[in-house]
Image (cartoon, rainbow, N blue to C red; front, side):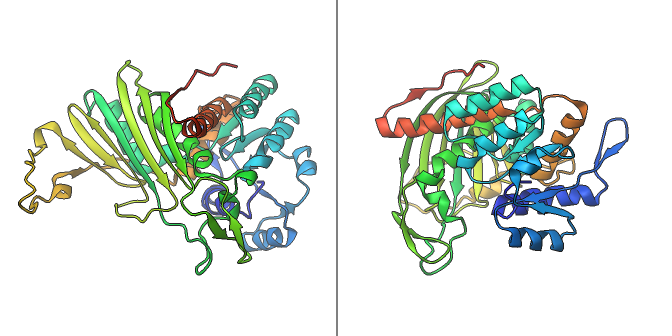
Length: 378
């Protein structure tokens, strides 16, 4: 597990995924047998690794990534380190015959992302890319509404994501400083458009065009040592996407992403889908819906205050099943695919489409125009 001293690598993948899987005795396979996991921690700071290993009763840790990649007893290489270092790590692991599981984006450029997908085809290893949001309770419910035809013909999606990330001057920032340096692989578009691509694909259909505006709202931030630095990467991205559903219907999606916004919504990310027969709003955990027959008829009257309680006119969508932590759920699915020797449904080609959308989003903003999203073939 490379990059476990970072926020995502530690909290979501080690603490909330792999350690619980180990504690429960591994992953249950279709035949009833179980496969156990044993993490090996990898990073650049040996002291931090040693502390984590001691805290969580982990036997092995190392700063020698190369040696571990080529070790006979390494089955899977997981990467949650910096984006600009990721392609080399993943390529090295696949060439060594190791299965890979990785955070995204898989690369800083589409060309690199496609090369990784091609290498996976050549080596035949199982490769998985974290698509955590599709496993979250709110989006699981939203996807179920789509599958059951609740919306009728889907018209649009509107997404709001983000929160205020402190500059670091008076209060420590909640995100690492490299996120705001373009030269280190940072940037809202690079970070989040790969997420929005798989969310849009997983909920609605394929992305056909993108029209984006990216901006750096906060030009100066303070790093982990309290020193000011120039924020060279965008901290907000406003995108409009044209989607085509599997049935061929057009859908317009709008998603605002910002690290310079204060939250006035129920969750840090929310998606509203509107259709001819109904609408729904989903966050990380909750999902509420309103059917056509239950839709009120508001009347615009700026001379009188609004008395309707609009939020009370929506009904909760029940889970109807236990939904685990999204990161853990995908880890378990990936491990079953590894044991079965089959491809993971969210693979490096899916990741390449995410990198493509980010790349086109940045280009769209720079050129001030809408761009087509061509299909990728290996």
